[in-house]
Length: 192
Image 1: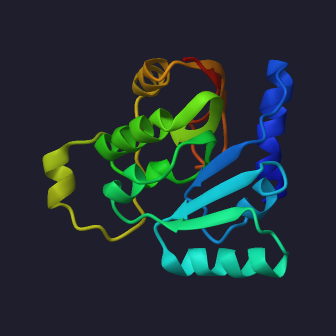
Image 2: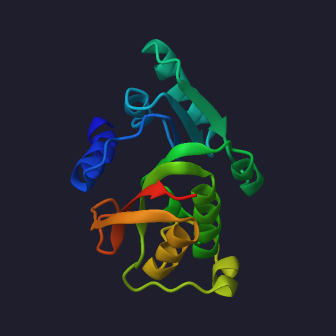
């Protein structure tokens, strides 16, 4: 997870800005692979995940390493996301894409709205998925038999970043999904 966590400093370096310390929300922390690294760069990390088992493993490892600046939270519903406190920096990779586009948009809107003034974000999201389209009626009628992979159009991502008054500094193609169309977004700072 150290290479993934280093992305934050790399984006800040390229932008000419000093990294912020404050509170980082890692949305979709899994077993804490990146969380444990983020704990060295931020004053506090709020690590959220949908899996209690993942959170238990991450918390156990954090205790073994003596990291006491991480708060682990189970989020299994959208209301759980709404209850997450505000933070200074949002970090999320290989998570949002596993939700259908309308829910991706709702999640991203809520999370960007929780960033404090002067804060920022680094998140990954496919904005196009080769050969895919999304129809709600078809989605609801399909039995889920594999890991879902969705995209959110780039213009929707841009609109949300603009809505929350965060300065978009960089959008870079990435290899997170193993396919074209995945991008990492870096935006900072959030205006009043």
